Image 1 (spheres, rainbow, N blue to C red):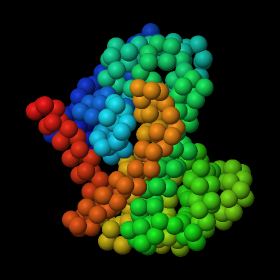
Image 2 (cartoon, rainbow, N blue to C red):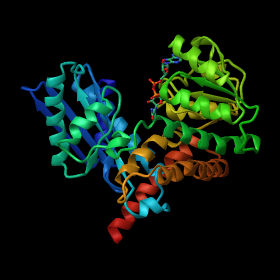
Image 3 (tube, rainbow, N blue to C red):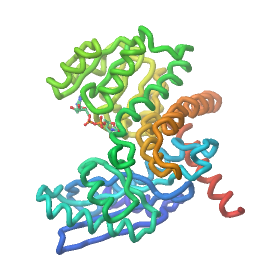
Image 4 (cartoon, rainbow, N blue to C red):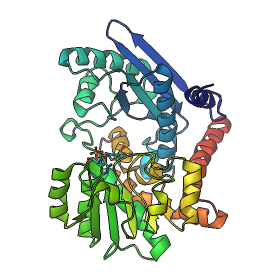
Length: 375
Ligand code: NAD
């Protein structure tokens, strides 16, 4: 059996059962959609819509299922049962949608496709809430909002939370504080050398600005040269070529560009004590490579914990009193507390932070499911 098929079967048969799967093939509109609601124990499935030309339906479903499960873990860590906002319903499970095909450029055809897709989301009655992901835009969400209210990530002037990137960067800063405390016994970034891969990106640039204010020494790289020069000048960062970024001597290596960058080739090059950034799926083989980093004495912050700031911000659009940046930012700062709790557990049980984070996320879902059954 091929690898992809195996992965799909693993997901379908996994002990942690998915909640719902919806498939749509609309030949007239050339629209092929899958929505996977991975888990609704903590609330409706929340997760963006990815629009990509997957080669096969199986490939699209594998990606969809992996991303949906990731959202369950991310949201379980992001919004604790102990927060004021969770008590009033700002609590979500994991979900994700995939539109398979070339992203339509023809505006009126795209609008028709998005409206049909939004009608499908609407038919789920709030079990799935979507937002922007690779291949979709805020403009797409505005079109979909005309058909369904189960869309988030809208502009602030429409009562939404706007671009999530500054909130994501802020969450990374708070997560890194917990890591700094564990490794250097300080919360301060002053004079710490921090490498930012993807420094010109939406998260990378915001992160660089926040860390510069805190007195950090910055080194960055980005394939977008002109944009990288601009932000480097603004924050006083030194730029290095993208393929020389891994071996830079630093305190923190922060990945904010691509997934899969922590692998057998790059890990031996790392010259840092902490790895933590927003990029999704950084570990090429999560279990094996999280252990390799731990053996090398590097504390790796799992991204589904440390990059939760953006999704926390988006989730706050569903606060009964409407979105408030103050309330959302209070919850984002809790990424620090969650980190402290997980770092302590990982040290006590001699496991990697990745395993500790996974355990805590799964445990939270399991406990809530049990409480629901017995309640
Ligand atoms: P972005 O596209 O704005 O930024 C990515 C940056 O990385 C770009 O400037 C790009 O030129 C650069 N880049 C690409 N390849 C590179 C390479 N080989 N070396 C150096 N730089 C390279 O994306 P973003 O929104 O800032 O997101 C960055 C990462 O964080 C992504 O993995 C994304 O999935 C993840 N993430 C983002 C958010 C968010 O709120 N934007 C939230 C959670 C996770």
